[in-house]
Image (tube, rainbow, N blue to C red; front, side, top):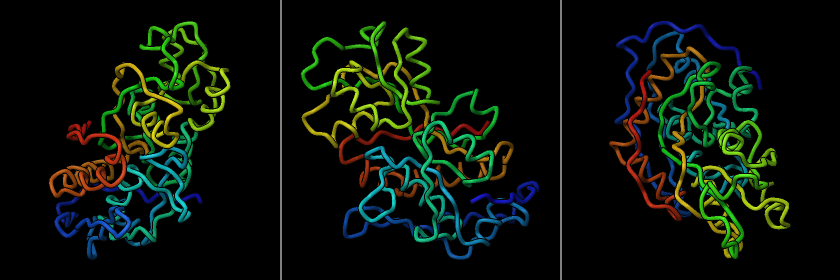
Length: 289
């Protein structure tokens, strides 16, 4: 679905966030739920006003990454990125039932934002200068790091140095794939990280390499088959992608993120999803560039 963007005006003081009106709870299944803010008021012409008036938001996320964005049996995605998306929607007065989720693999995140097919992308999306030339980022809201997944009985691969000259699987358009090429690995590219598991199982590649949190989810989903080895060898700040130069919307999302750190909704979202496998760490400071 392609959306028409409304031109922005400068952020007005009257654009009250009403952040304190948003509360988070936990449903019977353990998944956090974000309660929509009551009738938030935003500056006329802003993206926030347009979305609030429409009563719906389209969010791009991953559908194949356990813990962060995985299509659930209910037919809607589940995970930490999904919960972050719900927190943002709630502050627009939009309930989770009115969120349209669009699968956004690594290669199509920028095109989806540029073409207006999504309003935001929350999809283990590393902020970097190249991407900031075509889209904007709020956040970061999490700091990941690239690591290595191998078969459970592999004792040969211990650090990134052991990947030099070796076949390693990663995803087209991702930061980890570029890092592997710079490292000197023979990179096998596919569209999703779950599609890397077959080549790892049959020996086509010796490892899969991407962010540690993604690998931890894959290992947890396939207990006993794989293990994560070595220490993270990069820093991957996860941000929320949105339209280039929509500074007002970016700053507003940063406000929402910071409020979620203070009111406990961020930590609740983590504990209900990725926190079932990974320890909680304090979120990084947002970058208001």
